[in-house]
Length: 515
Image (tube, rainbow, N blue to C red; front, top):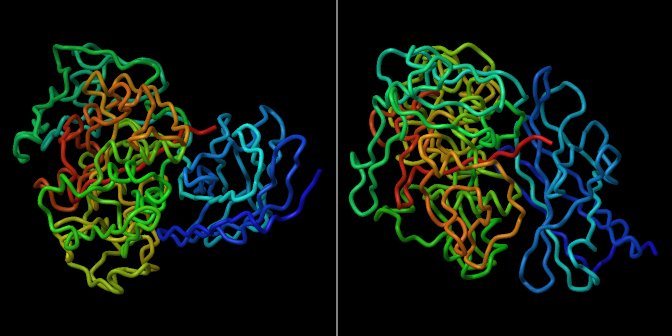
């Protein structure tokens, strides 16, 4: 039996502020009661999209539904080696991973600029989710802007000989190390072919700047004489993956919070511990209670984010945390490293205070003081706010069209040097090395925690509620000093550090292994 659009099925539009990504005109166009699937139609658009000869940007689309105020993740159709029952829009391509937790939508042909994909259709196998009746069912479609990072060789470390901060190296040579597969790697020990860390020189021991009880001594557990094994299952970046184009924003985080129970939400955005910070001054504006949590700065990164908060979001969205090896691949691409380089591939750095227009608005931008010839990043030398800036702010300026002036990585990913520290799974502790790169299934436990057994911080029935094994890469806007060194692609100053605290310049960026 085929039924056309049901008026009692509520479909809520989703808006993402980073590049004005919008999901509109949602409609259930048919329900197949016998085979228990529904066809959901929508239009999807976003700005600053591209596809070139190497890679493309995309939107990760997934569906949540509820019949009783408890939200669940919808199972989208997947058929190995044949059509999945989805209908790609004109000019667009859909790729579905085998777990059916969502789809990637991206350009079919080379091009750049705003894209508007109309009449995209997704097949939801609602019977597999235990749905038998659509009455009083509420559904929402979510989208996250991502960037495709292709499979291939890349380099770790940049060969720096000064201001080294635990940089990766080939053995003890000081030279960059090339990753050529996902095979196991020997860490440290000094042998030819091993992945060294410059004997841990310049790495933080946590006690430098965080008071007890939040500080814990932490360093790599390998060095030039002590070795460890990085297992084959740990994602090394050689295999293709999708990476979030921007740091997680407060708007995206609010959308997540509003699908949780009261207890889950309390564990995900309670103010304690927030280091006694003035949240408003730092541009943290989440207020309200579920399902009416709001933010006045949806375009600003989701600061005061602990690793277990980001892990919960990743699980909920069907994504996973990023490893520190993937971080360097996402920045450097396939290019030969430049000593001391930032995410845009040079050591050039703009040190001019900008003029900020439309502060607090979704079109917040820099009207003067940015550079069209040097790398742009948001850090204490140029920070006129004492807080994080809008995600993608440099790329949004029409005068910043190149990689360097836009502060973009080789693949077109934004703010991987500066703005906020990003949590990445470390190779320097056993808890990090146990990570196998499993993806979230869209469902959290009753505490609002991620449930993946291989993710660092998993502690039995509580799920992922610890931080050991997840370090920091990319640097925050002003802490700790000197930020200009921390922002470098190869800097591992805090790669193994962990703090039991939510801090004002901490956030996260998620990834997903490519289908």
